[in-house]
Length: 429
Image (cartoon, rainbow, N blue to C red):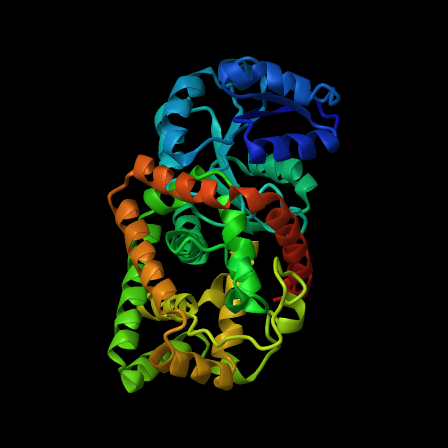
């Protein structure tokens, strides 16, 4: 892409590096930087890529680049833009990669020169996922058609599906498709650690949709804590949804403990109708056991124990209470969301499995201790998010991360393969 223009990246975390590689492979000149102490390591890492120049500061990146992408933590976006925004090249285009656009756009409006165009983006997947065919949100906030077309042209090298939203639409949809999903998996990891369990060593957690729970929980905890904290704490819609998820978990668990089978069943069926409605009897399922059984960290037992699937029951209950129909946002769905929706509809669109879950919830104590810790975890995550405590969020996340760390390499490899296989089957959904 030899048109004399260059692209700057401020923040060379995993996503920043992925963008730098993809853009430079497409022929763009990339100017990039991170914290001063990372300069030497980045120079060495990108030594074999002449199209990528590592600079010592964001001031240098801002002064010489025609399109600058801030790829930094959401909680730091204001301070970073405040520091480097005034150095932005005359007439340049600036955007960000954060998962919460309200603070990002506010920082741009506050600290950038008035002649600078603002076009933000957000790749709705992690750095380890092939961006081809994945949603890429583009937000034309303050820009000419020409400037916006340049951003589209530059980012077309990712091969992603462009989705055009406003800041407000983006934050609402990302909350709908990510916040509760993350809360569920984070709570599973906390519960397993509290019970001193490695679930892949327990026969009751092996096979089928249990494989999704294990692999994606480990995949989340193998990432950096701020990837999830920014969305959860800085997005008001996400806070509300995480709070409702904790309430749904608690209320359903109390019904299970009290043995209120009919009340539990009535509530679950109302939630099913609200979320799945006419889809229950038509259309192919997103996921099937024969696919999921291939991705197990343990030996699949001949006879599987029945599970009440509290985490799945609660997410549909939460969607119902908030009026969310997940299929409305499939165009902006992340791989994790599609997998979570897939195993959720697998349960709710199968009358026999759903009745088994209700029966198990009332009459089988096998998962009772796990469900207790899961309920505690969901409420604790919600509390930390509601209070806006980044440090408290990080402390809990990294404690659990350390517990599961020995199995990350194997789980990440298996999880990547599982995501690739499942995405092929859900790409047209």
